[in-house]
Length: 80
Picture (cartoon, rainbow, N blue to C red):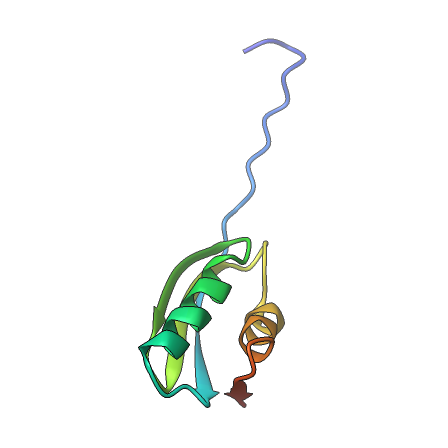
């Protein structure tokens, strides 16, 4: 390592959120939600069924509000 090199290590803060979702009725619905969530920066895993989504993500790159926005932009409602 040269004297001018600076090493930077960013701690990864992984979190899993469970979102309760209203309005999904078929596999196409769950597929749309999964695709939308997967596109968000920092999302590493998405598991969706007709009532909810479990999302693993890096808290340094996204947050629950962005996850909810990705779902509501498709016309579904995220329950509190």
